[in-house]
Amino acid sequence: MPNTVSRTLSTFEGFVVRGNQLGRTIGYPTANLDIQSACFPSLNGVYSVYVTYNQQHYKGIMNIGYKPTIEQEKPKKTFEVFIFDFNEDIYGEKLGVEIISFIRNEKKFKSLEELKAQLKKDCQIAKSHFEESKITISNFTMHIQHNVIHLPDLDFARHCETRYGINRGVYNTIDKWFSDNGSTEIVGRRKRILYFLHWVTAYTSKEKLKFGNKGLSEQLERFSTESVY
Image 1 (cartoon, rainbow, N blue to C red):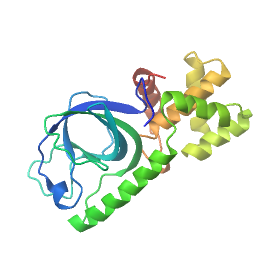
Image 2: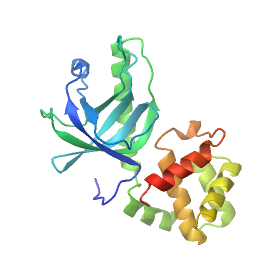
Image 3: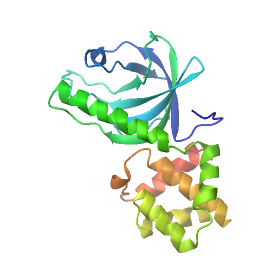
Image 4: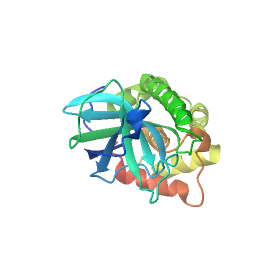
């Protein structure tokens, strides 16, 4: 994992607490986190994540939600992390979690075997995300400078539409929002547009990147307050 001095899409911390230990029975032991900070996605589902423990960095997946496959009298929202290639007793320890990308929505499976098969797919998807990931602030900036930041206006807009699944109206709204909020220099504004689109797609897949009434402006406002770009 590259060194970072600030968060990328979303980071938070939590202490590892005991759960129902079901993950161990299907080969995916998870660390259940008691979250100590509020900056995490509101969308329930599975994410690829970097995990920091004892100043060491690991890769893994995280599920945020209510574990609908497991019958529960009073479902409680949980934050469970499966860390790749890791086998240590970390109950009571603090973990840092950095979300890299969204994998899928939370869903109820017909059986634990079906859940286990899906978790295997989730891990494979996450590993491909890590290979493709260019989203820390430092290397994200270098990446876009050398690829798309200086494209002609129409080509840059088409790149955003194709890469992130937005339509031209959404692109124009985002571009105008940044312009109205001080990003008058074109290269700087394009960097912010691309970083925003990376940021917002961590919370949903690009196939479902749709904005309802005021949804886009709410995400832009949230980005402006949470981002350290």
